[in-house]
Image (tube, rainbow, N blue to C red):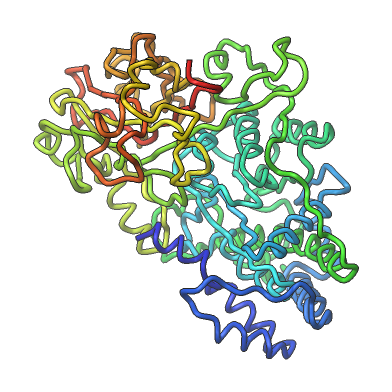
Length: 598
């Protein structure tokens, strides 16, 4: 249901946008806009206003009212402006102009302007209600003014509690959406000062269809900031920013007595969810912090909207920058370091020139996951061929639940119970995974090839790829179709005796046992210092099959001649039990071989 609710939001004016519009309509007398809102069919795509702003004062007054409200909350106009100036780092004088062009492109094409936020429990809003998280609050603040420009805003909070930035960099389209104009990740927790994962995440975002604006949420992180600064200075990205998300905020007002603080700084220690709700730990930001982050972003994006308004008034902004096919710089992190060398191509890509100098390119990865809260992509359950019992179960209850087959579910009672409470508080993330023990047998999946084209139903078969069994017999080797295969699990704790996929499981790829299974050691693919993902070598003699031969049991967007790779996963360590956690599978990521079949 979470996925259904999320998709529906993109086809209608959100509740937050409606409230914002009515607020501005009542305050400014914009009766025509309210009438338009009230007569819009909830189930129909939204019809945006025309190419001109009919009454220029509507937007300017709405923007002024928003800024006045912000100033009243945070100590007056000068103080409020200083707060934003200290919170947001920009690396280019053209940053706002470029963001304004993104807004105008969405407006001209009659589509929403999409902002997607990823991160940990901080981003998703733990300790508070989901609707009190800063992305959702920002949507309510910014939607009204933007709609008066003819721009429909859609904001996605894709935060997942208890995760790291990878494999989400590889799965960025699944969780943030390939149609995003702005993407963000919060690096304040969990990954130390590591910049390799952030650079990989950034590079994968740059390969998305709109090469979105990147917002780095970070308190200090000098090495990550340096990556952004250099990418901007060399002209590879134009409008990335850093938002200082320190908690508590670094402000002189926080030193004052409670009653003398401006309203936005009062009651800063209070959470929005009922007392005792999970996630109300001292390091988890409170409701007022989320409101402050929402205001920072709102005011900054409103500055870009001002430029968009000026361009509309001058009939400018009709030509838009190219987003696809952009080159990447050589990575700033040492891609030949011992801990990164094996997965370097998955993180950073390849140099275009064999000498290694000059521009690079990065072939996109395809991801399938068991996690909820995704916007795109094939669910991992839909790739199962065999070895899985139907239904979501509490796999931790007894061994019988895993006898003879893997199960999809929560790995512990604590996680299950927390999820139940989080759902009641409005949260949409769901961290379920496949679980197996030695007596569960093999979990068999069928990995489709040629599906990294934006997750559309088009499979690249016609003319470019084999279309029948005869051609597959001529080109049977899996290495002609796939170059990378990554399997990830989900750790609910970091206990040393938990399943290690490199030693406690076996992988049969295309009918041949993989002899090389290695940890992906980049910091962003670890949780509590344990590696989440393994790089599974594709054996030289591994072979592909058609969907008709080895495809999934479940209905999926496949055709009989579609080409894929069978993957069998078995638990081999007899000492693993329910007490020290079964092996789990939550994400599978793969990369197609470039060029023609050989």
